[in-house]
Length: 235
Image: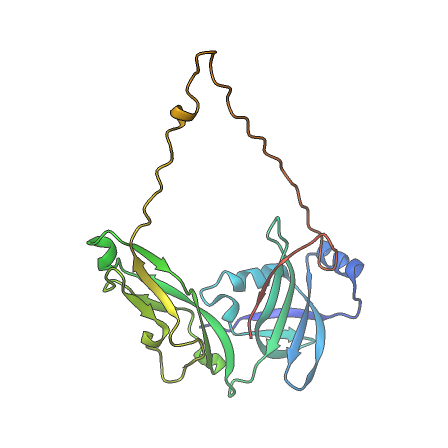
């Protein structure tokens, strides 16, 4: 896999106005963290970070952050999205040592149609969609694929049944259910609407009128009270 390098600039200006100026210049603020090091405020291109998030490994992508000609190996620690337009607002990075394990979450992906669905008419319930693991940065899997074709009605696939490389330690509770096949819920039969709205001797029944309201919420950038950005974080 080719190395990914993201250019970054050190920044000294902080606050809402400074962040607005950065975004107007097609950049977003961020902070570089590292064990035993002072956090470094940086500015990066949202397009570069967006490309990393859309890649196969997503937020677990290992890449170089280049600041002033010096490259530091990092992964995304946290990022924030504007709630309405889904634009990147902020990105934090964590410097890693290639010889020391880190804790991350990886996505689970199910494959196959369970027997309990195909033959017995059940429904597959995907309960746990991420797995927390500890491993060296270079051993982080892009995702964990699980075959559920053997699952029968009422049967479970638990975390303890997931087989991974010996280089990876699973931190998620082994008893946690990842997926199971359940019976469809019986639908409650409502009383016929015609019976409730049937005409009486004095004339036709009055129709029920339901009023719906609409609330518009417009978020602002990080730091404004109106904004509630989506936050993604991992250990």
